Length: 522
Image 1 (cartoon, rainbow, N blue to C red):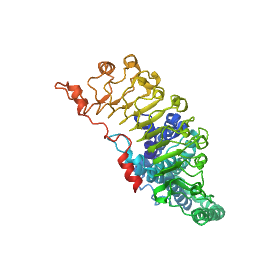
Image 2 (cartoon, helix red, strand yellow):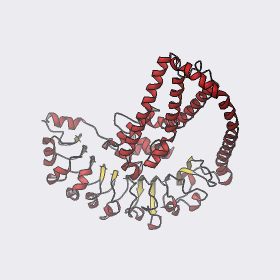
Image 3 (tube, rainbow, N blue to C red):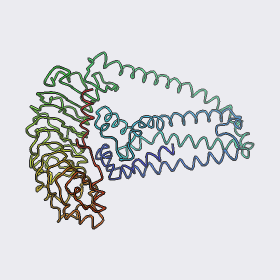
Image 4 (spheres, one colour):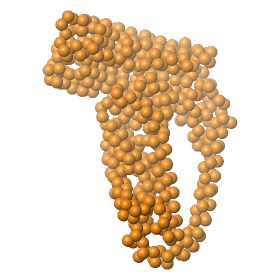
């Protein structure tokens, strides 16, 4: 328990690092704001277990007996107390340590420590992402009240350890004789009273177990009996007291269903409060269903390889309705303009937006008024932009990627808000037909957070002065400049050679297009 609580505390500390902002955002604004007090609270409680462990080890050594040995406990009441404390300890340990560890272990194993991230192919897999979110909600507390309830079983463990330590001390040779006489006098009274009090408790536990078992079986069978099976549901749930079909991941493929739209009837019979991920693919005349406005617990929304015909204000993403929303993806979507469904104020929890392989030529100039909160990831890759959209100069994003766009000028981004630049950590402009970068000479002081700059496959011949100024101050980001005229010169300095040798991302971009194409066809 001590090791588990210490590990969880360290996880909270790791989430405070800038590189883990994306995963901290998954806990929501409230959980992200309380990472420090929760970490301190858990760490202090973990330390409370340490003296108990030392006391058990010390007493075991002094008594030269096993911790759970009953040889010294000749009194029936003491044996009963050991069995009771051991049972409580085992149950609390299983529910608060073993089960969470087993649930979260597969996601820890998937973490790539070399890149300090999860492979994007897994992260954009809706089933894997949904399971990770449920595991994170089970593992991490998002408020001090949640922390208090999480620690209740650990309080039980601490109490059980205290009882065992007291019994072990009572069974130690130097205390055994003086306590044996008093224990024998109380043995008859304790055994008789415990027999009378244990019967009602046993009956109560049996009734509770039968009731819980009945509710669990009913919750498993009710959706099957009362709601039709839907092949579009990729991850089913079995919540208690829900008679409608509980689906966590819904993927509607128009090609497989031999239709061009998503009919409203396809979403009938589903519990809207349980849907976490909504994916629509291969629809040649997509009108976003009105049911989307009812998915108040939606975590992710994805449109893949669709022609978007209608997504108006009636089905828009609303700040007060879709407050848990984390991710929005539009990949291979044919649309002439950004739909109205994404032009309203977005919920603060939305931190990952990807618009990839579309025919968009511009973004609304006032889009930053709707996207006014901080984004962790903004992928605008392989779009038809001829210039950097004006609104990007005011959208705060830690990671911005414009890979593969047809951008010929970045003048608009040269006047970026200092607050936007101060938040920028990773900027990717690879495979863009630019000959010069934006002039940030007067904004060098706001670029101290910039850690990576990718300019691969560009027509860039020289590095801008502001980048050289950052290098001179020792705050230069890691630059990736492979396959540029700048790197094709005959004489390249050692520092420049390192820039020319590094590889940042694949030509297809940061969004895993190849992996997602395979996933959507499977």
